Length: 116
Length: 113
Image (spheres, rainbow over the protein chains, first blue to last red):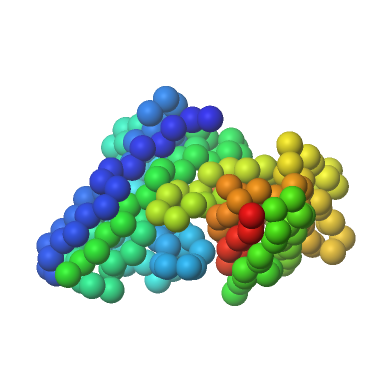
């Protein structure tokens, strides 16, 4: 299967700082990438959908000014958590598809964010 | 509104047994139903998926059964092994409408040796 690499795997940051998480499709071009948030022992909640070269579409309740998503190329999307607070601590996971009609989604390994 | 309901939340099975996880959906427009396996601290990995034009799909020890009229689908893991211990998520999407996955709540499976 295709490989999606997420970096970093874990990060600890201080309250008020910003953190950037990268999601790369290593062996295919991803026209669409998705960002999820997962709390312990819970399911994945879609935060936003990003298409290369256009603005991300955020799910209801997700603050777009707090969770900045950039999909500048067909192989890279970034999620920046701005002015992080302890309640932002979570497991963030990206996934990528070749196109909207390509059903299989490939997931990154996730990023554990801890805000202290 | 929880569009995909998954049960049970947790499951303990003896090695060699059959693990069965069920999901029910509400939106009849869903046309793609994958199952994902997730180990602690890792991202989900696709196990098997089905489209609504078939009632069953088998890949190795994993089988999806699909009941369109009941709006239900299930994952069967035959000859369950300790290495299958993980969290399993069902999901559903509408391919033509952006193909965004809606996940079930997850099932934590423990296979005892």
